[in-house]
Length: 110
Ligand SMILES: [Zn+2]
Image (cartoon, rainbow, N blue to C red; front, side, top):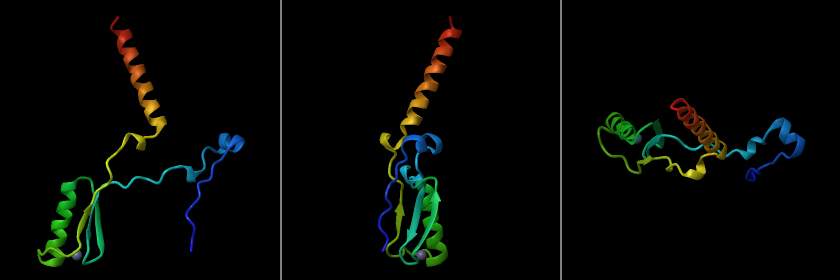
């Protein structure tokens, strides 16, 4: 049995030279919508839109189940994006770019 992965943290010179340890990064968010057929135990996708996942479902139903509805099928969607999912560095970078652009526009107009 494997134990859950522990997060390691680099400190001091190791952090400066090597940056954060890869285990410090959050796992990637699941993207796209997926269709899972409970009868075939197969997952299709990802589709970029919910409509795309519905199209995958309709195509699978038609090709593999003669248009019938298999038991246990589901459409899995990624969780909604929350503000805390956005890295602080991305927020700071966006604010800095916006501020620079606003200053440039202000200076050019006067
Ligand atoms: Zn199926």
